Amino acid sequence: MVDASKPRGRVDIQVGAGRRRRWNDEVKGRIVAESYAPGAVVSEVARRHGISLQHLFVWRKTARAGCSACRPTRRHSSFRW
Image 1 (cartoon, rainbow, N blue to C red):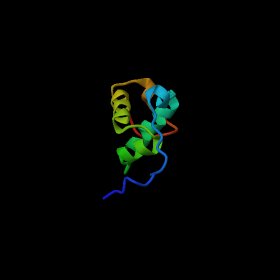
Image 2: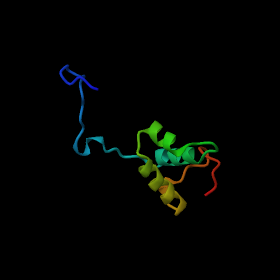
Image 3: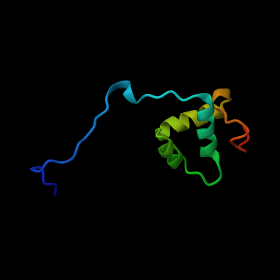
Image 4: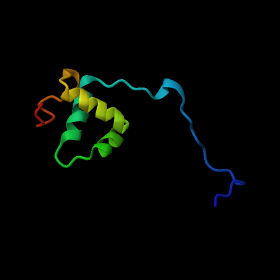
């Protein structure tokens, strides 16, 4: 049981679009390529980069559909599109 009578620590709550980030095409490509690497766990890749799992899956789906902005450069991946 939690003792609610004692002060707990500081809690920061972020609201609004303050957390929204813009990802350039090169970074998206590297993250997508990393998620396709042999032995990679997609949820771990997403967590490591601070994005939601659903966000990464959208990027992967877009890359498979042929979006050049989401494709990794050859230098970053051996994954074949």
